[in-house]
Amino acid sequence: MEMSKTKFILALILCCVIAFSSGYVIQNVSISKPTGHLVGNIFVTIEEPMGIHDFLNPHNLITNIGDNQTGIRVSTNGTYVEARWISLGNATPAYTLTKLTTEATTLGATRKLGTFVAYLTSGSAPTGGNYAFNITAKFYFTGDITLNCAGAQWSATSGSDNNLYACASITQTAFHNLWNMTILWNFIYVRS
Image (cartoon, rainbow, N blue to C red; front, side, top):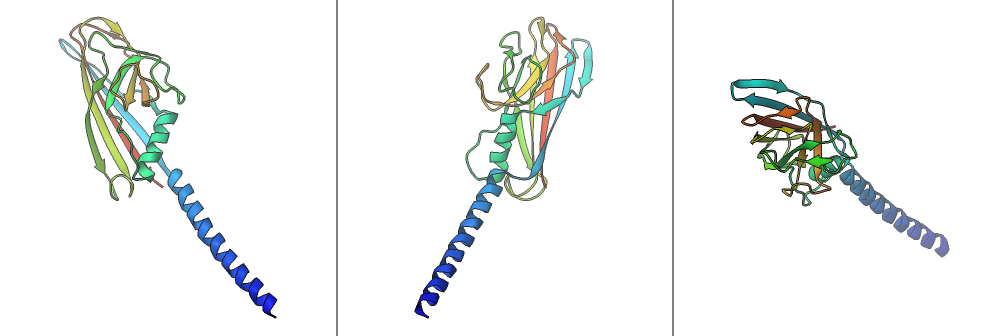
């Protein structure tokens, strides 16, 4: 009889250990893979000396590394660097990009620190609910330049790799001296 009590107690302890461990594992899995959806919207205003040349709302996408950065941002209180810089250059937008293929560094098209505004739609920042932020930057061109892509970055270093949060194609590709381009990028994360 003593043997079955011992087995029962060991089985009970084993069940408690498994239940505790399972809860811990499930919690960590849910933290590392939040459920939700990230959307980026980009609005581009192009100005020439005589006034507005064009308004664009180009196709854009969140890169794979940008999506991973969002997962860290919305699921933990760990450290992350906000995407605050906007770069211009030439590239074909793709989820696998980690930087623009060729980034402009002259003629007023150098990577700029944008005005960053974070705001919440519900919950507490940024782990408790839906989360959104804007980046806005204005570029003043000082010569003729050809560009077809913009990037949202979390590094100030032009041409640096592994920090391209999002990229967008720009259909207006020829820019001239005294032209300006304002980019407003809005990112919204909606928790499922």
